[in-house]
Image (cartoon, rainbow, N blue to C red; front, side, top):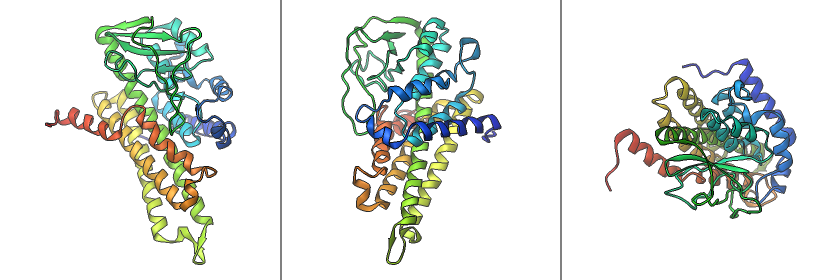
Amino acid sequence: MDLALSEEQELIRETFAGFFSNESSLELVRECEPLGFSADLWKKFAETGALGMGVPESLGGGGTGLIEMALVAEECGRQLAPVPFVESAVAARLLARLEAPDALEAALEDAAPLALALRLVDDSPGQRIPAGAVAGSVLALRGGALVRVSRPPGWEPDCPKNHGSAPIASWPLAEAPGEVLAEGERARAEFDTAVEEWKLLTAAALVGLGRESVRLGAEYAKGREQFGAPIGSYQGIAHPLADCATAVDGAQLLVWEAVWAREDEPERAPALASMAFAFAAESAARAATVSLHTHGGYGFSLEYDVQLYFRRARAWPLVWDDPRRELQRLADRLYGPSRS
């Protein structure tokens, strides 16, 4: 297993790092709260071709793989970019696998983002959908069929405020008419794959968030002096930041291994996706917490950037579930259901 990036992959990472650094400042992130979406940035981002980068070229996409998408997601997370890249890119790949060219073409050309309902509609009809507040259509598994539900004309979704300023919302998925894209076993298999890819790309975004959190803490520790020396020279400050940097690096490698397994060892992919999601969530939350406390009382002030990362580090994973429950599901998958 070779996890080294190719020259082309390094170029993709550098390109989108530059794009988000130039176009998605933290000032923009603040301006977009509480909804967490910039229509202007979304338009610019769509023009890069990133939304269809994981779609085969024969269907109008970029023909790249999940690793390239993970690199873009990581840069999204690093800058807290207020665009639903993960949701739209995963949904576009799902449409491509379902061989729904008309729906895919409309999705890639439409100005509105795509979204994916992460849970079965029959079990969770009122679920909060990531990017649901701004999506033009939602892909969902309902009654054993994968359906595409378009936003009803004139309908406005219920968009609850949340600490992560994420554009989550409930849709009337149980009763709304939808275009059937697949049914039966294939529908469930493709849905499960899409959810796994959502976890992986969300984990990649959390890696970017965690890495930037560590950088913010380290920069502050180098400039803030106490007792005649930078606070970063004290072990009580330096060592926790170093531990966080190590954990975030480990989370990145785990995400890359899980991405690699999706194509080369698919039988390991579901478990690795859960591991990557849970560990990235834990590492990002820890990094943001340590960085915030490194700032002292300033870290809790809204004018400091670190609180933007602290809030999102905890909120982003919860769109799916508490990472601890993801670990429980992973244990059940690997070792059988636990006894209550």
